[in-house]
Length: 218
Ligand SMILES: [Zn+2]
Figure (cartoon, rainbow, N blue to C red):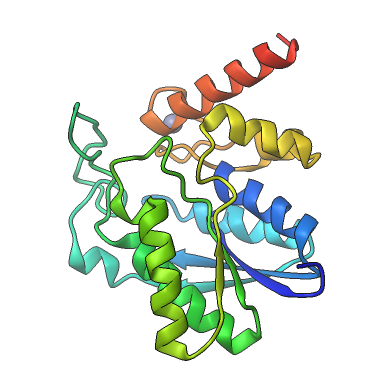
């Protein structure tokens, strides 16, 4: 894969930043695409742009604000609380979001000559999201190839990793410090370690603690 070009779906969070480092390790040329869908925090877009700049990769921001017209949820609307109830999808869920993002990424990939599309989706931590599952990704890969008569490969380096193993991967890629300090995962828009209270921060913290314990650092 070294001689080919890859496009990373990039939000500036822990997962997609780890994927960006993975892509830089595995492909000759890497670009990133960030989707602006009226996230709660414009900071997310800024963080993505800063990281891309620092790592020397091109970043495009695509306007996907129409997503907030399609569904009411806590990531795009300030008047909805972030909560997670047992057995239900969290209120941050945007129906079909990954499906749409990957489809737009592939169209862009065709334009810029990138056959490899990389996304940080995972079945392990977010089993409630149907369009994060491996079966869906494989199905979409076939559909994209048919829709554009091309041979895309969607890569999901995090698909079977839990948060601890995502930290482990970033460490193996020499990016543990970078991912720890420069990314934004928090739903409340707090960089790095975040607010510590929201579900995203708790998941990130628990994973990091588990990894560092395993590694014997803390
Ligand atoms: Zn938080």
